[in-house]
Image (cartoon, rainbow, N blue to C red; front, top):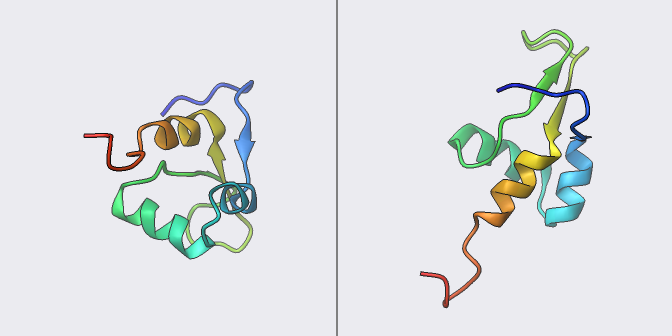
Length: 73
């Protein structure tokens, strides 16, 4: 993934509030490969001194690709 500095990064709380799901649901979807992977800021090796951010455009694209009900086949 290429990251451009002008892209907005979202915190998990922004995503959970927007989608009305829990943090554990987001991380489950990431693990399953059905949700965009976050960018890890800081040490990636399980350190508590890191944080995750998602590229807003990737989350918007993911949401746009979701089925919208019975009429979407």
